[in-house]
View 1 (cartoon, rainbow, N blue to C red):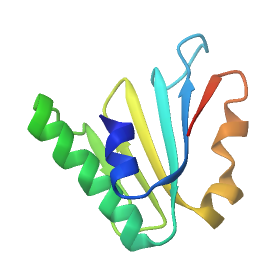
View 2 (view 1 turned 45 degrees about the horizontal axis):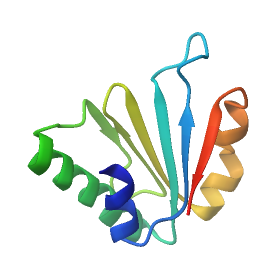
View 3 (view 1 turned 45 degrees about the vertical axis):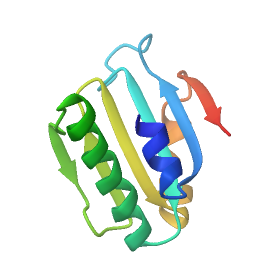
Length: 106
């Protein structure tokens, strides 16, 4: 559902990182995608939030960065990162968790 919500709002470069086999990982999965503007990042995040609440009555445990260049949505086992291209390039989250299993979504 998260991937569908991202695609619906034209999120790009979607990656799923499986962190289950990494000790001290903050969650089981990261879902990371890029948006071209703060407005698009917010639209993607709002779409995820709306769909998960409507379909499975799931609220984010925590959220940060509404109307920012990096929105983080924490659903306990899954943490969603929606970043502007420059911010994603700067922080390189995929490299920080290099031992994870990374799946790129087309």
